[in-house]
Image 1 (cartoon, rainbow, N blue to C red):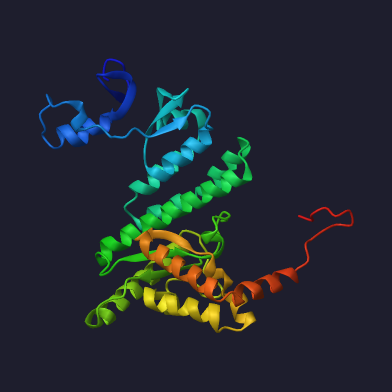
Image 2: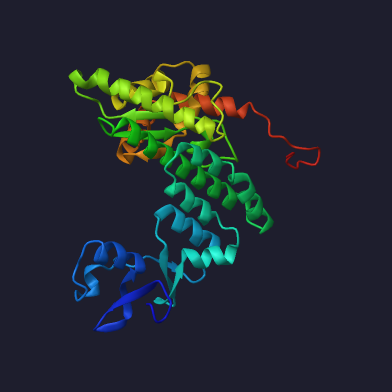
Length: 323
């Protein structure tokens, strides 16, 4: 690697030199060999990353960048004709893109101060402007914004945990509305909540207090990063939306089965939710509960359909969409 001035090598089996089974990088040597004091005479199979993650040679650089940012993998094998023919790295993408979002992504992950995150969040608009100038599609831009926003959120929560200590029970940070649909613009207002595992009765007050403080601090720092407060107070800082999973299930059951049509319409924002940070299984369990209740009682679906059918599409005289 030193002689060739490269940062990674592919690993293959002796029986089939064409079949790549893993990859080793300069980071592997630093963290797994030098830092751990391992014997450098060990076979590379003991430190390689396997299986090798790959992308198609036809994949767009922008999509490769998104995959790297989503998975945290900096080296990907490139497949062509069913065989791995090369490696693409995050540095290749950054060189190709000039002012790359990957720089911002790495800065966010490395930030240890809230004030630093505030400044990094301010860079999003100028970064997106560069992407637009390079001809990126609207859908790709929206995905990029959502991904950057999620990483800012994740780092905020990491820093809060360092101050408050680990959560007393498992939890999932929920994103509602446009955030839940991956339809974020530059700085959409906050629509979030917390679902956590049902605590033991003797822990109930302690757990509730922890997540109350956690939610308040998180929404405060998101506000400092430029994400406005929700005017309807649908935020994790509101105790109504920071609940154990049993209470969330009761709330969705009420909306589906007992709420009047107008209340159901107002509650629709909560149905577009997804997991943002923490233990994803809690969000999955809540989604499964929601779907099963809607199958048992589809009144809310009918009421939402009736409401939406009353909304006229913005069409011009020649039946073109007015945008």
